[in-house]
Every structure is written in structure tokens, then in C-alpha cells.
Image (cartoon, rainbow, N blue to C red):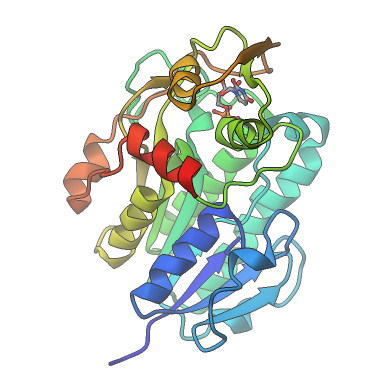
Length: 302
Ligand code: UDP
């Protein structure tokens, strides 16, 4: 059997390490490029050196990264900075990481003629969309530097697909949750905060009135879509990647159970978010399998 080589940038992070698990399970040799700012060694410590190679580097520096792309079939580009409030405090840092970083990875993938390049974009590009569920044709309205820089990364990915006929795909992630979610950081994702709070028997912090909704997709559903996209003949495409279901923060808190405290609203926090996933469902014959109830059960059992 011919060995398939894949690169996962940000492979030591929450989503990246879950993707690495899946690729290794399917027989790939994986090269992880990660600067270990938010990524953790322990997310990958269960893998043997035969299956994965971990390279500590920052894709946004002008380091020679081309050599790692030699003979690589699939590139999954997940590395980037991912918090909204810090992006408002330091937009340039976000630009360097998320835009220049993406350009560097694109250049290396172009030079080494990889078979497929998949980019982790963000549903934050829609701002507060008029239409819910939101389709890929919705107006772009970036409301903070995080959204702006992730969107510019996507523009680069799609423009490289056009200019250089690269086999690129961009996936706009909605709210991803599952094992190895980062539980640190001042502005943690809702599930990270709730997990820590529940463990420490503290009240769950509800931002605003908790009626705001999000589309939560389990990381396992997301990685299976990613792998299907890589193997497909599709290119130069943008897809929403969510569950297609809308859940309020209050509902999540009720499922988890326990006391709630209400804290002030965050800047640029949309009231509703839900993906229209018709396009990806049709193109790769994929659908999410893990319901929010099952996903929460799994998360709080582990
Ligand atoms: N949120 C909350 N409590 C928390 C953390 C977040 O109520 O402890 C809210 C947050 O304001 C947002 C939603 O949960 O409305 C999802 O937040 P998250 O940071 O997970 O993702 P976002 O969609 O904002 O990128």
C-alpha cells in the first residue's frame, strides 16, 4: 500500500490533534507543524514516532517550510490565532499569524504541488447575518480583526485556487466542540468555560441573557467532513461546516445543569448563528451524526 503523507498545521491544537488522530487511524503519515503557543504536546503524546512527525515552527515566520511539503498529498491548514477580544487588542499580530501565515503555507503547497489544500476559515465572516440558517452566499461582514484576518486568509486560499489553479477548499467553521478543547484563556469558548466551571462546582457564566444561539458541531463530525473533502475531486470551493442546528447558550447550560451567573455581553457577539449546510451535504454526501445531547454527554463523561 502506498503511504499517504499529510500535513496538519496547528496539529497540536484542539481541532488539529483530533484530525491527526483520524488521519493516523486511516493509515496516513502526518507531519504536524505547530508553534505550540496554544497547541500542546500532550494532545499528540499517544502517537508513535512512526506515524507522526512533530515540527515546532511558526508558519508566519519566513522560515524555510517548503522541505516539509515534499511528497505531501493533503495539507490541512488549521494554524492560527483564534480569540476575538485579543484580536481587537492586537490586530497586527492576528494579521501576521492568520494572513501572512496562510500565504506562507499556500506558497509551500503550491511549490510542492500538493493534491489538496484545505483551509479552516470561520463563520465569523458573516457578522450578524440577515438570513438564518446562513448559506455561503450571505454577505460578508467582518466585525473584528479575528473575523477579518480569517476571511483574508480565505480570500488568499480562493484567489490562489483561481490564479494558480491550486486544488484549494475553504471551510467556514461554526462552533466546534469536543475532546481537548482549550480550557485556558481569559475569553474561553463556551464549552471550555462550562467544563472547567462544572468540574470546579462553580456557576456557569452566561454572557448576556443566554438567549443567543450558536451552531455547535462535534469535532468528530467536522474531521470526517474534512477527510471526505480531501479525497474528493472538488476544488476552488467554499463550504459552511456546522451541524445545521441552532442551540441557545441557556439550553446548553440547562443540559449541563447547575447554577448560572450572568456576565456582560462581549463585543461583536452575534445573537444568532446557524449554518445552512445543504452545499456540503450534497457535494460530499456527508451529514453530522453526533447530536448536541450526545456530544455534551461524551464531553462531560471524559
Ligand atoms: N459564552 C457564554 N459563556 C461563556 C463563554 C461564552 O455565555 O463562558 C457565549 C458567548 O458570549 C457567545 C457564545 O457563548 O455568545 C459562544 O461563545 P464562544 O466563545 O464559544 O464562540 P463564539 O461564537 O463567540 O466565537
